[in-house]
Length: 408
Image: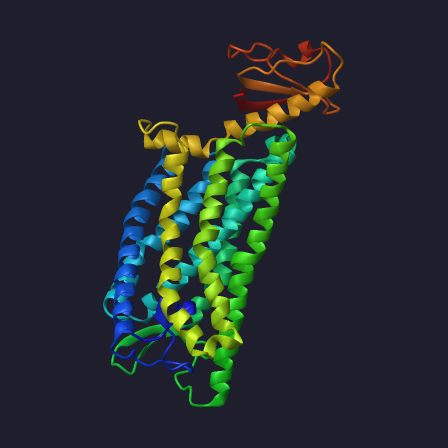
């Protein structure tokens, strides 16, 4: 086996300035063979569960559910994972053939690009979702007026465009060439040259390699992680401040999806930085990279099949519930709206004179806001789905908003 490179996602860097040599027979060869088999097994499971699970999410969220903002977010996450896992059989075949690529240059470029497109699109979408949740909790009235599925689709398209732009260099630099062992390698040709004998080509290869690793770490991990951690800290503070027993289910599912992404990709980014460091040339570090790359890459690949499992197991209270019901519970908007409304109502009841606080009921109809924004007038019947009185009967001038809400 040739030395693997994290930049190649379980594919050899050679041919290039970093020439690799076959492993000597011995215990290490047995470990490598085991890692090959483990990678193939993980890829196979990720492909099967990812295509099936994400395909089911796309079918239900895309064709069976009302297009809410939450549904738009989760549908795009499923699309990113589905496209990637659909092409995983190419990586399975490449690993099974001992890193021989028989599928041509274009598919070599496409397969690698899709891996990084999936990574960037997923982490960008998770960042947008976290910002959306934060705004929903901090500015509930503003969110009700501005959170529309059409706006969510526009933001999702911009997110896909950004992910496509930042992953495009992987399509440019990916190439195929015949290796020393007479096998076709799918590798990163950062110098865009087949001749690495000159020092200039080797130096250019190293500079672009480092630039790619740094850009991937900053835009694919560090910045998104900072924004997401800040948003979740704000939400957690609001939960504690309002003394709520637990946060709404969609928020818990989003937190679980985000945590699984960063846990699965953290080893990959750590090893990438280690590969770029000055100590990467030492035998010990080379050995760590040689054995760690397959494990880190397999874990990163496996993340693409986890989200549907989280939706099913966290989106339902009972295993008897249907899959569609589980997805509806996971993607629901009502819980989030009721939580924000309940929070606002508690704050309002603390400032109103004694006896003027209003009860929260369950309704689907019209909500009225006073011009000063201080109070919200709801249906006062707690057990019936009765629309609120007309605006003129509220006793004062007010704004009228059509909403659908369930308040516990």
